Image (tube, rainbow, N blue to C red; front, top):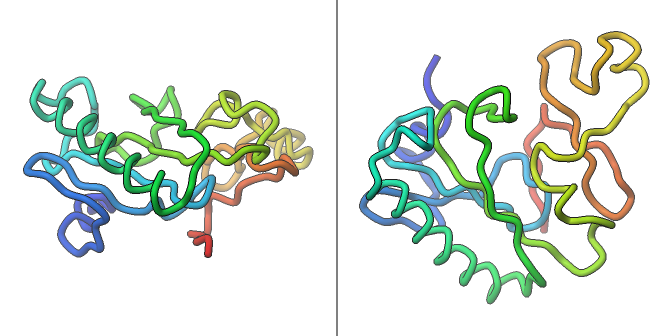
Length: 159
């Protein structure tokens, strides 16, 4: 199965780039401006990247934050990564999430960060015993001031 991030690196559009890293909008944003900073070299494990590649991701994340702070008037940012499937990584290509936060968008932004706050959707928990989709295993996350479930099956965009 082809890597969706490798495809995106080849086809764009990119929002920022350097020799070892590139950034693009997340197809499943948890807030307006949610951006992924990815390694140009395909490597699933962030910690298996060369030191200069890891440094390039963090350096480009800082550029992305500056751009988003200006363009989106974000009040803060969640920046993080999920290393491995057990940690919530769903695309096995090393990447860092840059998630703009806006005053009042969630009760507790730390808990609303990617992979940290799951919705007990009732029917999924009843069917599987967990807050994951029975069909594909994707985890439902609570985001936004209404604590709504994120549908990870369909790409979304914010205007």
